[in-house]
Image (cartoon, rainbow, N blue to C red; front, side, top):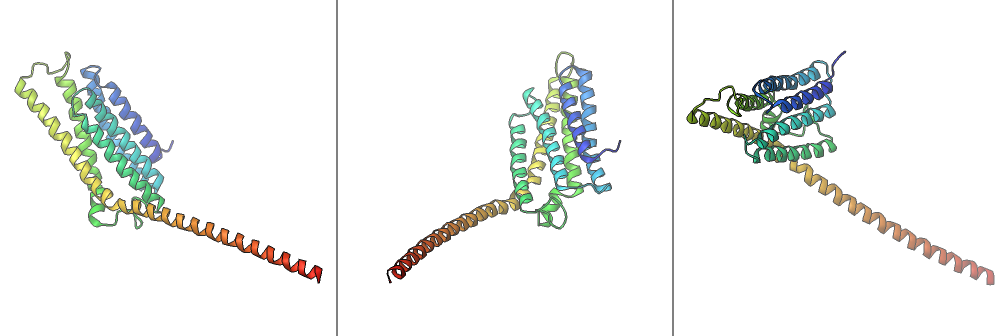
Length: 251
């Protein structure tokens, strides 16, 4: 069986959901979930590699890959927020950021732009460097992997009655908690940084949609006006021809 990038993306999402379903069931299942998390991030790199190597990269495939990213990061951050390990605002931020950037990307695709190449929606060099470059995507994937694995290990080692390191001092536990907060908000900050070029350059497509709608309204109004004028002209012509026929009859 030859795997396609979209199939690898679907497998990645399934592995990610399986990992989250194992969290909180015990220290060893938490460790297994951490291992599945690493596998999910590795599959994220694999689908892109397959798309480039086999020349299977398409705009639809890119959207499916982004959808997989959104599902993975939202399910992880939502779970860790529900169990009280991160702020509830963290999954809210990731969801809002993803919704805004994906909305603008959708408008760009409708306008004929893609995520890469000569017709990419990002025109500035710094925008492409922050969003589309390999170092940026790799660093973001590594930060998310480190964040999810750190929180998973903290869950296995320090939380609950069956924690593997249940005898930690309060100071050490506070240090571990502080590291989790720093790591998660650093990941969120880099996520926001990568969204800025899309937000800055994508608003032209919003205004473009408004202009197109305005042109459509003007065109529809012009058509209605022309139709009315044509109808009036035809009516006058019918009346004129009717009078002419009547006059010729009596003559």
